[in-house]
Image 1 (cartoon, rainbow, N blue to C red):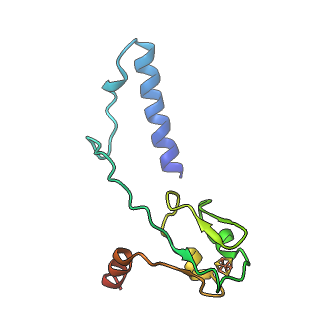
Image 2 (image 1 turned 180 degrees about the vertical axis):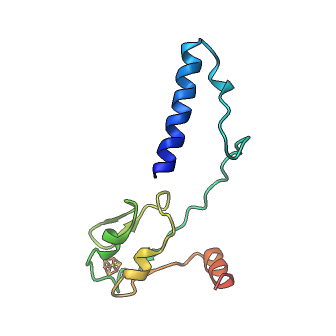
Image 3 (image 1 turned 45 degrees about the horizontal axis):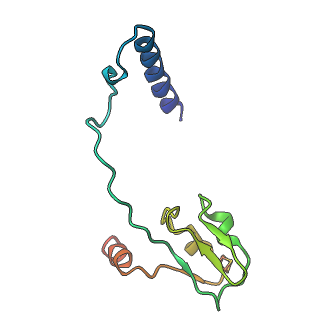
Length: 113
Ligand code: SF4
C-alpha cells in the first residue's frame, strides 16, 4: 500500500508541474504497462444459492469481500456484476448452499487442480 501511495504521489507531483507550466497532461510518462490496453469484457458469473438448503445465516454475506450479496425474502441474491468469484461464500457456507453452476468456470477449476 505504501508503494502505491508513493507511486500515486509522484504522478500527482508530475501532473502539478505540467499544469503549472500550462503543459499537456498527456506528456506524463507513467511507468508500468504502457500503452494501456482496453480491459476485456468481464465474464458475469457468480456462485448461486440453493434456496432449499440455505439456512439464512448470512455467513456468506459477512465473508464476501465486496458487497455483491444481499438477503432477499427467500434467498441470498448475488450481483454478478460485482462478484469477484473468490468463492469465499462457497467455502464458508455451513450448509453447502452456495455453488458454482457455470460450466466454463467449473471446467477451468478442474484443469487448475
Ligand atoms: S452462508 Fe450458506 S446457509 Fe448461510 S445464508 Fe449464505 S447461502 Fe445460506
